[in-house]
Image 1 (cartoon, rainbow, N blue to C red):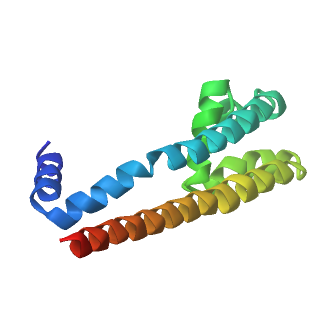
Image 2 (cartoon, rainbow, N blue to C red):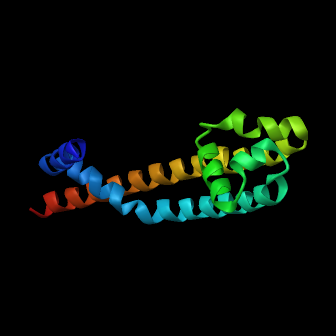
Image 3 (spheres, one colour):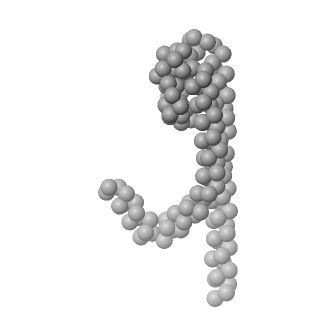
Length: 142
């Protein structure tokens, strides 16, 4: 638990880091909306994977055996940690399975991840500008 205590102590002791932490906390509603949309897409693709791949290939029995394992495998695929491995067995059996994996990667990895990053950046930037404007107004008032 020591690293968490050090991080908490650092955030509390530094005024600038505390201000940045508050900005990040204010971003959660926007982040959660995009993550919810990504979770819905992952669940939809996991359901497709259960229907298409389960018990038909070795990969289907390993990664797409049930809905829970399909969601987990696809969530890891969003990070591309298991990218070529997850599709190799199904691709060897049927070349059209690449349409499933490529469409998933384009939607979740390239589109949704960039959408999340853009939303975080834009909201953080606007929150910083709003906070700077408030600080400037308080200085002018005094």
